[in-house]
Length: 248
Ligand code: F6R
Picture: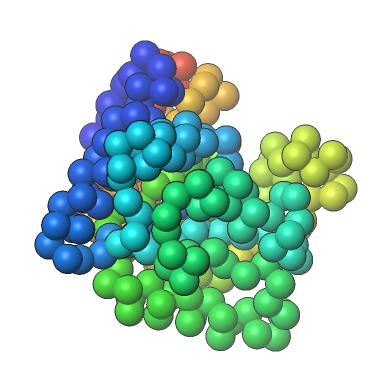
C-alpha cells in the first residue's frame, strides 16, 4: 500500500480527480471506455465536486465512462432521500454527461428471493464491461470497505449483508434516528473490490486514524476487511494529516 498524506482533504481529492481525468482523456483518445468503481458517503463528496468542476470548466467529458457503485441499502427505493442511487445522482451524475445506461448502482429493492441471482448478474456486468479500472473507496470505523463488515472474507463477492451496529449508529443522523437505518445492504464483496486494476482509498479526520493505521499495518484478517487491500498490488491511500496520525 502506498500512503500519501495531504494537508487537506481538498488537496487529496483534487489529486485523485486529476488522475481520473487523465485516465478518462487517455482512453477517450484511444476510443475506449473507462470503468470506475465508486463509493458514497461523506468522504468522496469533494472528489465528485472537483470532477463536476472539471466537466464544466475544462470540458472533461464522461461520455466514455461506465460506473459501478459499491453498495446500496436494502429496502430503499431509488427515490428515498438516503438511497445511494439518489446520492450519486445528486452529488455527481446529474451534473456530468455520463450516459444513464452507463450508471450501475446495486438495486436496493430486489426481493430477497432474487438477491443471489441479482448479485451474480452485477458481477457479470462488471466483467462484461471489462472489469474495474479504478476503484474509489472510503473506509468505515469498523474497517469496512463497501459494506463488507468484520467477518467478510477476502474472497467475498457481491451479496446481501447485515450492517454492523457501529455502522448503523454512524448513519443514524442521516436517517433521523438509528431505528430508521436499514439493517441490510447489497455490497460488492472484498474479492470483487480486489479484482479492480487499481484501488484508491480516501480518508479524512481523526475518527478514522486508528482504522486507517490498522488497515495498512496489521496482518490482513477478516476482523478488519480493509486490511485485505494489502494483498493487492496497486493500492494508494490518500489521507489527510488527521487520518494519518496513528500510522507508524
Ligand atoms: C459507501 C461505502 C462505505 C463508506 C464508509 C465511509 O459507498 O461503501 O464503505 O465509504 O462507510 O463513509 P463516510 O465517507 O461517510 O465516512
